[in-house]
Structure formats: C-alpha cells, structure tokens
Length: 258
Image (cartoon, rainbow, N blue to C red):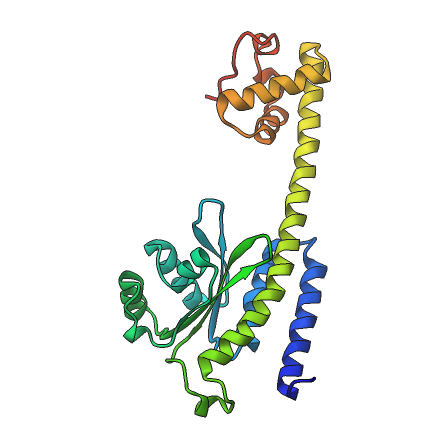
C-alpha cells in the first residue's frame, strides 16, 4: 500500500537526508546534529524553529544544534530551569506536546519565561533514541498555537501531523547520530592509543624501563591524580618525560599535577 504523493515525497526526502548523514557520519558529528534540525525545520509541518538536545550520562541535556537564535533560547530555558517539554521527553522517553503555552500549567518556570521572552506558543518534543540507547530530544516549536484539522487540510490536527512526521524523522536521526557518535568515539580512541604509545616510549627512554612498567606508571598517575589515562599521556608528550620524577618510575612517589 502506498501513501499519498505528499507523504511519498516526504519519505523520499527523509531517506536522502539520512543517507547523506550516514555518509558524513565519519567526518563530523556536529554536522549531523545540525542536519537533523535543518531537515526538521524544512520538512516537518509546523516546525518553525527546531533544536536538538543531547542527553549525558548524568541525565542532563544540552543544546547540540538549533535552527536559529530563538530555538537556542528555548533550549537554554529548558537547561536553566531543568523543566519543560524537552526535559520531560528526555526523562520519560515519550513525546510531549504543548498546543498552547498560554494554557500550559505543567512547568511554571519554563512556561513563564518562554512566554515572556519568546514568541513561541506551541512545542513538540520527540525522543531521539535507538533500541538500546536514548540519545536526546528533537524539539519543534511554532510561533502560533497548534491548529485544528481544518487548517491543515487533512484528517489530522496540526499537532498530530507534526508528531507523526516528527517521529519518523527522529527515527532516521537517531540511527545517523548513533553511527556518528560511534565513529567519533572510535577516532578519539585511536588518537588516545597513539598518545599513550608516545608517552610510554618517552618514559621507557627516560627511565630505562620496559613498556609494561611505563604503562603501569601512567595508570598509577591517572589514579593518583584522578585524571584520565589519555590526558596523563598527553601531558607527558606535551611537557616531556622529565615532568615525571625518577622516584615515580621506581614506584615510590606520586606525580604532582600542580
């Protein structure tokens, strides 16, 4: 069964955009983030302003990309007050719809500030997630309250159509973002491995120790200073092996980071 031409065109646009993001995933994670909000603004009905908020391991969210300054402000208000439709969507994993902020009573601080500082009146927050990982939230905002079906020319209300299309795009976006993030982490791991190898070589030469002992030194210094191993190695390569006293090589003292 095929959908109406408009929906077929929309699916084709999303498919092409998703392929482009997968192609660029190995190059630039930020480019993928920006493409997610740009496509949403251009092709999701009613999405006048769009933003992508990414969740971290501690449960907080930050604005990773936005279509314009107004979308940035909405994201900043979410972050400042730790409440609002995007925050709730990030916490629950469910879509959150606000058809008219002037009548909204769920998030008093966010709502008051959004009404006072922006012309935004309707917000849809859709989770961006894969089967195994919740990446963030795609926020779609309108400067007017959500419309009824008579204004959209379909049997769906404006908010229903926005959510349906927004969720489709969020699914494409989640896969592309997940791929891009893995590529970024892989590149960082390779860079860290190279840096650690260089640091080990410098320590081996300076202190006349073997590779295993050099890595033990780096690991011990990481634990003693609460600095990641890769950062300790980077400091060694940047400042020289002389930054570590000979006693540390013998395992009798710790390395001061001050």
